[in-house]
Amino acid sequence: MDETFLRHKMADTEFDKKMASFFLRCKEQGLKVTPQRTEVYKALLTSKDHPSAEVVYGRVRGVLPNISLDTVNRTLIMLSKIGAAFIVEGSGDVKRFDGNLDGHQHFKCVKCKRIIDFRHKPFDNVDVPEGLGENVKVLRMCVYAEGICENCIAND
Amino acid sequence: MDETFLRHKMADTEFDKKMASFFLRCKEQGLKVTPQRTEVYKALLTSKDHPSAEVVYGRVRGVLPNISLDTVNRTLIMLSKIGAAFIVEGSGDVKRFDGNLDGHQHFKCVKCKRIIDFRHKPFDNVDVPEGLGENVKVLRMCVYAEGICENCIAND
DNA sequence: CTCTGTGCAAACACTTTGCAGCTAA
DNA sequence: TTAGCTGCAAAGTGTTTGCACAGAG
Image 1 (cartoon, rainbow over the protein chains, first blue to last red):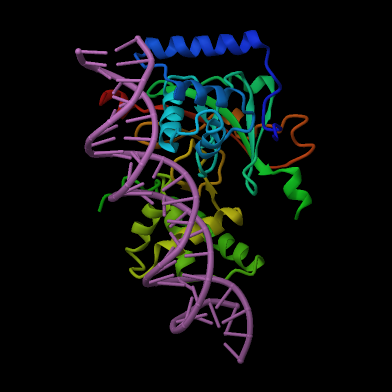
Image 2: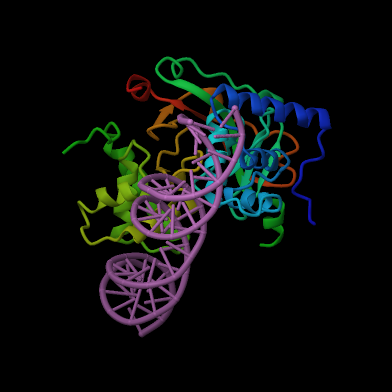
């Protein structure tokens, strides 16, 4: 099996901690912990390729062959609502999800749509500028880059 | 007619300059200057609401009743390709376009999808961090904010 | 005159919704 | 037990494509 899309194996304790905090978050919100939700979240946590719903669906079916794409979709959206994941910003393509909440930024290739993480600490917590926060409630500020990735430059 | 979506009228000379540079850009790329393209670009330039293709379509039909949505779509994408406009970044909704190339940032309401411009000069030209630019060609870097707008907070 | 652009229609991909049966708590 | 969740199917929405005709250069 090709596992190049998997994150470097995180320490088991770290993984367990994330799962536990997910269960807790569900309970707080009155959401049931179902095998489907557990597996979708697990799949997202162990993916480093910012998968679309379709891709998560493919992976989870390895464990739960009867899960439906709708459930995956609903679960991913639920995850972003409760703050356990978020939808990667981008210029109008299919939704891509990210379960990694640690500070990092995204570069997206406009040709192949590949998303590459990068990390520039000063971008981790960009301040909400004066004036904006007065009227609206800012939930997320991020720095986003787009362009052409090395593969696409090579295959040109 | 409700014109609240129109930008504060820009100086005619400024407008003419933008149209002229658009025509020039088309010619450079070997693209024909058609009435449809002219009107789509004009509509985008005078809109301040970051319209979707559908919305631009509605506005242009006031001038060219027979234009098709496809043409509007194709033209908007063409405009972003030649650098006369761009697709507003966001988390997986319909494409929204912006013809204003001057430095500014976007806040998007996750509930009503309204996009609000804001301006924080330090964000205008965020540097491409070391390491990222080495392998990929960065075309655009931007700072993006999302949250809940005042209307949606009020109507909660 | 030639070759690109346009309009139409159909295909497509992705999401969302309604509902009946199922299941975690 | 029961409120909430799932799977299925269908409808909806936005986008893309192929092709014949029209029109800009």
